Amino acid sequence: MTLAKVGLLLMLLTLGAGNYFLVERLRRDPTTPILRLKRFAEIEVGIGLTVLLAAASLTSLPPGVDLPHDRLNWHEIVERATPQWPPRLTSPDYDKLTVAQLQARITLADAGRANAQAAYVPGEGTILPRNAEDIAWSEYNHHWAGIFVVLIGLLALVEHFRWGRWARHWPLLFLAMAAFLFFRADEQAWPLGPAGFFESLRDPEVTQHRIFVLLIVAFGLFEWRVRLRCSKPGPGALVFPLTTALGGALLLTHSHAIANIKDQLLIEMSHTPLALCGVAAGWARWLELRLDGRVSRAAAWIWPVAFILVGLILLEYREA
Image (tube, rainbow, N blue to C red; front, side):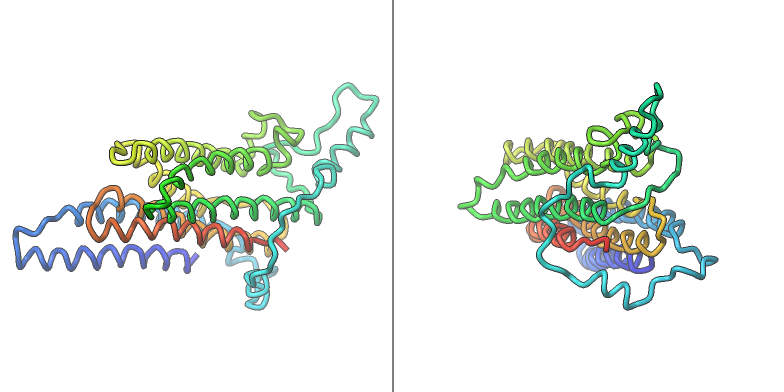
């Protein structure tokens, strides 16, 4: 939590330093344009709201101060954070997952009954046990999502070159990634799991995943339209930076229902750098669109690099 807020504070201090030097120049020369001051203030408001979300969410996550057991030590954190190669690019079969095996046993035991009991009831609060296949399933999802995001960042960089205009269709990769996550992110919910689509929305974790998929589709479609229009992006161009920054802020509030407090905390710790990179990418793209000159050109390179960092973090994501 502290490191997350320090990262956000550094972003605000950077913007504040830019505003300070601009105000000092304005005192010496009253004709100095103040457009950059306004644009930086817009971003400061957005990051400031993200700080509030981070403080409200991360302080409510385990382990609480009154829980002396199951604390992580430095060795466990370093061990989980150490990169491992290659990423997991093959998925276990669905019928080997905990929810599928439990449902199969219940169905077999209730074969003579009219209504078989469900292994997973959204919103009930029951935390299903996790086996090695469940962990492999989740890691596979994160690693393939990382490949999508790395490709998006690389193609966004390639587009800056005259020979790379073909790469302007990179937003279509967002749609492919959204489809992948829609089918794979929640194995206990429709279309793979026993819980129906609307029924599964009673589970906050599933609902957040669905919201993330909608955000990915939204800024993918809007940004593709922006890339096709080239020199006249219009107001729709702001959808991409706003949803990216919002997605990063929401990721700071996202939590997993896992019985093991250590595993839960390690997963939350992996979310934090992803969220910070998302916030940086979104507001850098905002600056690229809302300003011109040197700041805009720098921001145009910053946000694709932030996307690449997100992808690389996802490629190293582990749950065991």
